Length: 109
Image 1 (cartoon, rainbow, N blue to C red):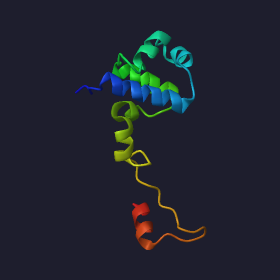
Image 2: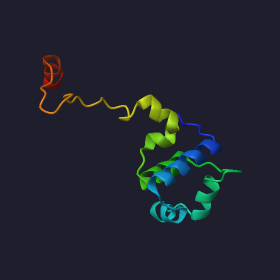
Image 3: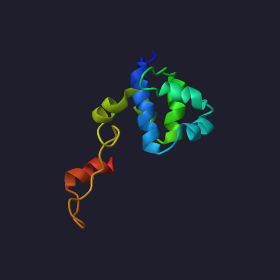
Image 4: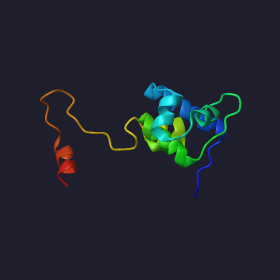
């Protein structure tokens, strides 16, 4: 099933990825092969053109953001938690404190 992402939402996600990477349309164009004009159209505030998921993935990779961000945007970030949906690491509360026996059992298997 293809994801349907509205052009304005795709534009927001691409602009956020560019801002995160601190890069320009020209740099991303060179990295992805997507023309700078197409990137400008994709990120337009007034009439964004949207883009295929394949293009959004290329932009994500060039900007160093996860692909799921292009699929789900900021809503995906909050539903996945700060750790991207992976289990939170278990660490002792204080340096030198030993994990409880329950934690030892979880990590042993």
